[in-house]
Image (cartoon, rainbow, N blue to C red; front, side, top):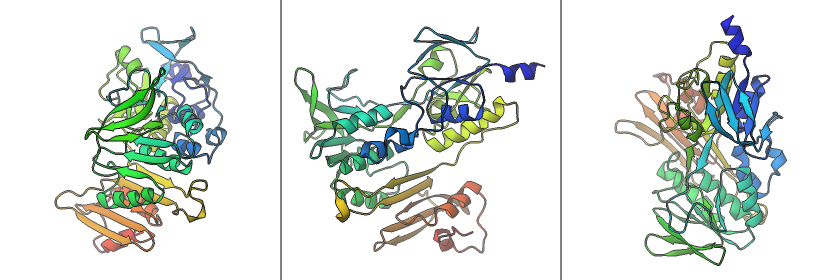
Length: 410
């Protein structure tokens, strides 16, 4: 009887991002509270909205009933209540925290609690729309951060006709996903679009002017200034854990969850960017959706466990139609998975075709596929991903080069 009562108890989801929306689509009768005014949308496609390829309604997720523009401000664990900023109070039998993450605002001179005019984070649909409204052909735009989000933003702004500078503190672009050779090819592609790329470049502050402070330049640690009409902050994200921490839940880097996505409170779960599972924060759409599918089974009373996700990162930098016309560079597709940086004792197999602009490399560790990077021709990615996700020893008779053929050795 207890199991039936718990499964019938109301489920409240705080957060209407991709993880929360996916869960709501699989669990009937849930109440979803979302701070954003928009219906849930595919965050992966924000750069396409910025570039003008997609309107906001195109990236909307399948219809999910959401209480939009409502922020949860307090969790009462004793009485199982969620207090919201509109004065409403929601009772829950099970509570799901899908609060996502916030963009990291770097400690720069001139950057306070209120962002100067012309300074934009790039995390939400409103961020993308604000940037889209602000950018003009010929505008000087500086993107701070050369990770996946920064590269996507720089590409989109270039398509809008802006003069773009990408400032990356690390040694090469997309350090989490790419090896130096692949990053060098990505850099060549961006530079062919007119994006000026600076690596090992530390930003010190912003120079602002006017009665309502507006950005005029980005100041580098070496004293050099990059003139800027727009500055985009793409310096990573940080899990939103304040609500959980205030409620007394176990929080480390993220909200700690077990294999049933359960927090330290048995009636509260967490998933997506805010959740820390087995000491891992993913911050990617794929793991968030997989967690939502597992949690849907758990909430339905069926046995299910989340064992972690072996995440594949894909990025398509499409050919621009406005800024560069038919003479611009072709689209560049890339995929990265696992550990692309070899350790001592690893085997590395690499194929490069400069004529076709294709690059493939995989890392083998103790007879297993540890990771890899593909740029240009992604014909082999499906087979490679299967081999990596299976995490089985490779057959002794398999030629290592077969891993880089179109069927990935299958």
